[in-house]
Image (cartoon, rainbow, N blue to C red; front, top):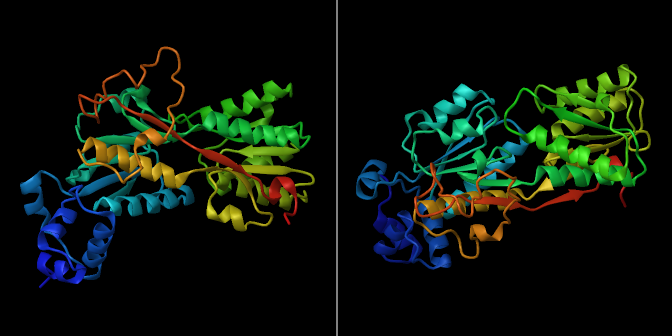
Length: 370
C-alpha cells in the first residue's frame, strides 16, 4: 500500500490538515513547513488519488508544457527550471514537443492529447498570433518566446531586438566591419529570427556600418549542422566575414567548427557570438560569447502567471510585476488595458513580461580570458 496523509504528517511533524493544505496548494502554509511537507511527500512517494482530487476541487495538479524541441539544450534547460518551479506549487509538468509543426501545435493547444491539465505553457513556432487567439480551450495559457498573440495572452520573453543589437554593438566595438548574421528563418512565423535580425540591422545602422544582404544567411533550423553549413557558405562564396552573430548557441558552435576547419583562428580572424548561454558554449574551445537570457526568471514568471490565473498566489516576492512590460507597437492592443481574453480571466488584463538578459563575453570574441 502507498503512503497515506497520516504517514506524511508523521514524517514531517505536522498535522494531517497541514499536509492536505500543501497537497491542495492552499496558500496559508509557512514556507519552511511547506518545504518540509514536500520533502516528506517525496521521500514517502505519496501519490494522491488524482481522480478524487479533481472531483473535489476541479483541478488535476497537472500543467502542460509544449516546446518545439525537447533535445534542444536551451529548451531542455528551460524545461528543467520549469519542472523545479512547478514543484514549488505542488504541480506536475507534462512535456510534449511539436518540432515547430503548426498542426501539432494546434492539436496540443486544444487539449494536450486528452490529458486533463489545469493550465498550459507553450513556446509556439508554427502558429500565428491569429491562430493562438482563436483557440477554443479555456485553460489558462502562458506563451514563451517571441510569439505574443498581439498582447492578448500572458507572455514571458526576452527582448530579442535589444539583445541582438547589444551583441552586434560588441562586435562593432572590437573593430569588426564585416559582421554576418546566421539564423534568418523566413519560413517560420514565430518571430524569433525576425526580431534578432532587426536588432542586428539596427546596431549596424546606428554605427554607420554598411549593411550587406549577402552576410545574412538563412537556416532551416537552429542546430549545429545549420550553423556549420551557413559558415561554409559564407566562406566558399567569397563573403568571408570578420565576425558573426548567430541567433542560437547551437548555430554558433556549428559556425565555430566550420571556421576552424577552414583554418581560421577565433577570435583573431573571426569573432563569434551566440544566443542562449547553453552549457556547451561555456566549455567549448574557445568558450563562446553569448546573450544569456535569465532562464530562471522566465520559469518563475511563467508559473507565477499561471498561479494568478488559477487563483493561487505565486511564491513570496515573485509577482509578475517584477518583470518589465515591453514597448507596445503602434496599433497593438495594450496589455495593460485589454481584457485577457482566451487564456486569462475576464477581470484581468494579459501581461507581457520581459525578463532581463546580459551579454557574457568569453574567448570567441575576447581572446583567452584570464
